[in-house]
Image (cartoon, rainbow, N blue to C red):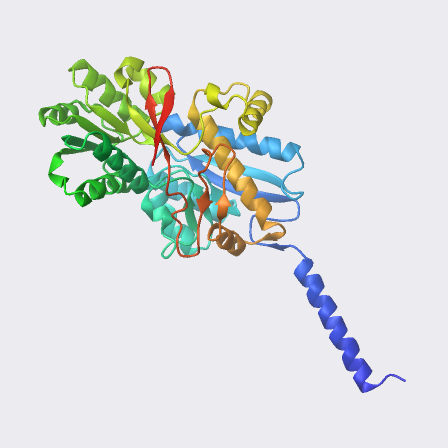
Length: 400
């Protein structure tokens, strides 16, 4: 005879069993299922920042490899790439299409501080992860106000501060000129640089501050003004095209200050080579990932894996163009994040994960540089490696 107590015990056991089963079942947000995960990104496939278009191409090639290897936790990755022409209004339109029409699970590696800032409120209001942005404005490390957004690397403020400390160590009495892009990214880089100089009591050594916009056809006036200030150090926040204009003009008028150029604007293939390698001799930049063509990494397992991927999935890629390395790293970081999510493929879980990165690294990260976040602090990387151009390649000098 079944007693009331027996029935209650059976019911409790069934409830536990159902709860356990429910917890074990995969959970999904839009863009994720048991078969695929849909990811979106916007890239300047055309326009003034098209030098970065290969980031998107590298991401596509990386996910082809991932899919050939069985996907992520058994799910195929579908990457949707739209051209935003490095134009914030176009970024808004393309991002809304990704979220509302394509129903992507998240965006990954979308490029540009100004462009991604234009959609940051929208992404956070709608709870769509804006992951590993290819832009280094401080706003992408603002965990309090934008918990759904995070970049992949040091912020421009961090980078500017590192350059300023190097100037103070090597040329403490230098007169300094600054050129920066007239947007949030450029202002962030300048503020990071200026704050360190001013904290050292040497703010009056910044003798010229010039700005530009990416569509400026020439920067001749800015360069002439900076030369006229008597500056013997030049700090530049720029895109590659603008860097080439500065290098070429400075060289033509015989002005040769010690140049510091942010990573984003220092690419050999699209900044230095168009101006001529001789124009950039001695220029200092920074890195948080390795250069895959540098002989010093020839035996590194991660670099070997990159070359194997490139030969099989991107045979036409120019490995001297660091945008391919960057795109590879962005895709690898996104892949690892999705692996960490397991079967809990909810946007909320992604938000939780990006706020709890501990020792997270990408395959191309410089040794010793890792990502570390808390729910209240998304300044994931606070150190970087300084490099100097020797006429052929960048060589490591000092670590900040």
